[in-house]
Length: 408
Image (cartoon, rainbow, N blue to C red; front, side, top):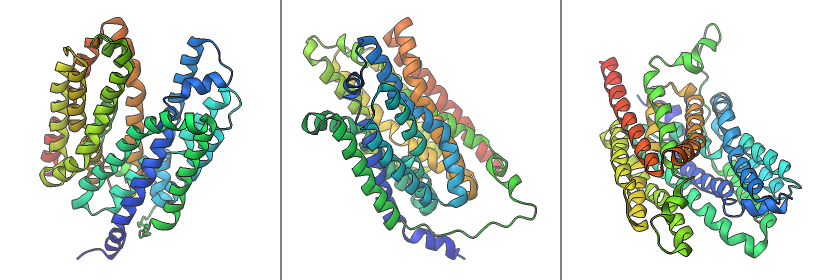
């Protein structure tokens, strides 16, 4: 017999998905639109030395992801306790305020502090993944999370384009105000359009402490594999960021075309992921989420090898696009495997840990890529990432077999 609470929570899942896609897209656009003009804003705030401008720009950009990684499990735990919708309302309103305040920064220390605040208050995209994962019928989870991933990737792609176009028209500070206003619209849509049915409280004789967090998960191996895979995905995406412009310069003869080609290379992977995420999610609903994860990691590992030996910029663009196609299925499948292997009462908490692991990869990727590229060589970045992806595919294959054996 179908649980009436489950039926009720699934009744609005398509509208919830549409609102979460819009909110995630707008918040990610706001988070990434400052990439093209961040050094200019740092200079406006009084930093004049070129090396200091680069250094402060890196600190300001990474600050948001650092603080977001620290609090993601906390927001996930609170979402399990008080509901996912209140966390999305908090995140959208907090981000709208933080964006407006960033446009009012008076010096570079305030800029870094407000970027840290944005990470602490934010988490809309990860919170949306939690709400969609838990409110969508299980047989449609992969497709729904794939569609969500497409919206997030689209935000990552559009953000820098908006950041390049708006400041010349309205100014840097007004660009932040516009971003805050856009997120405020997402806040209104979240508050008035999302429907999350209240769950029946779970019974417990001696309090719920033993049944929360990691203690509630009987088999932790699938969860640990997913945390590692999420970190690996972001590390693979970000490892070439520090070297991409220098690497492209060795492939392109005309110096005036280097930045354009580097931009195309960076965008190609995101575009590939946008196109493939929902399709791979739908495929995963049919053939198994873990099978798609193993396949995506293996294909990505193979595609990294020719990237180390390309002879023209366009070859690199095509290979990064193909790699984006293969990586697009990972985020929705990671969330689906976590949802299917942990009790629903701790799903938000565990998906919060997954978000933290992904942010860890997002921070570690550029650091490792820059270190390896500077001390060993740029080709070693691609080949080293290939080894990591192949190891991830092997580990997931073994974890899948172990989980299947435990179920028998």
